[in-house]
Length: 396
Image: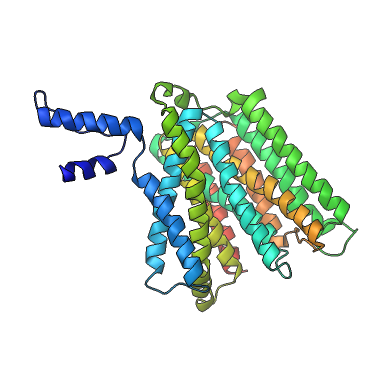
């Protein structure tokens, strides 16, 4: 009986035992399974893993201030991957309950809020010499999303289904907002004259911060209210009868931020070890930021890839592009207001080679998504640009 109870605790809510008619023992087990599912309609591992990750992260932060011991790095890495899978499970539960595009928006906002909190904490602890952290983080996130996540999703979807379709109006609209904010925030500062260097004067910085928030609010209004059909996946709507219940939604809404926080904290804890490995390999220190950004974006990237493999490219693009938009439109205003309050300069302008990669990424993404249908060709193009970004990061 104890073994049966243990089995019930770990049994996922969407899988049940094979019953045999007339077997009273199995019928009793089935009744208990039904009761457990009704009271706690999620796999217990998706609850325990985020909680355990937060406890372990807190212990690591108290016990170690530098790189982790070598024997702990694999453990932390495996726990990080398990926490990513838990976050993806809760994100998919929310998306299935709320429908497109609300699930994608919620996941993007949750990840971005945690990213912003980490950047702000770094700026508050050591404002001197950290003026480029927001720029580098946002640029890395855009390149990873536009080329890495979108590229692998298009390639995998093209291999699996030959070609995939989606609503081009929504994707192109998201790219238009992303291009506008990216150029205003990351390119234009190099060419202004009010203040020397790739920085804005205070009035200019306020303008860019307000414009970023305003454009993001306008995009959310269009995505959720005015033109929701441009971002909705009809394949998801067909599965409406399989929506999770209210209890499952409540648990997912509570545990998704916890799982994402666990991912970010574990990524930050692993950062000194990654930095040490990069330094020993003789690679540029900027590569550490790229690795951390890729780790933080794992939940969204994994969810987007799973959607593409299920022939739901619309959902995949909502996750990817929504993540890039939330990253730049929320991070830039947050660090801008903090920079003004602290009286510290904020370096936003990218270097020349990064400007070329950014403009190339936006141009190719617009061409790839303008027709509403993609193949492996578009996926290959984006992955080549992503490889170029990684090459430049490793060998400037």
